[in-house]
Length: 90
Image (cartoon, rainbow, N blue to C red; front, side, top):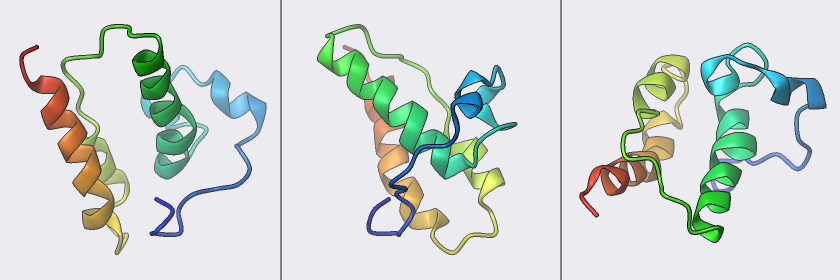
């Protein structure tokens, strides 16, 4: 995300984190959700050695939400890899 100039130095306002919608789609842009919710949650799971989710489907959402963006294909490369890794048997 940094290479694509999508990484933000300031988080969204606190209210944005209170969303109950999938992907916080009512309060955050897709890339904000990746940076401020998905990545920190994955780090927290890894650091606490908690079980990782086995079925995630972020790609379809990002494909639709960012379909007009030139950077979409490059952004999806690591996301698709993460999804594949999480779907592998332990």
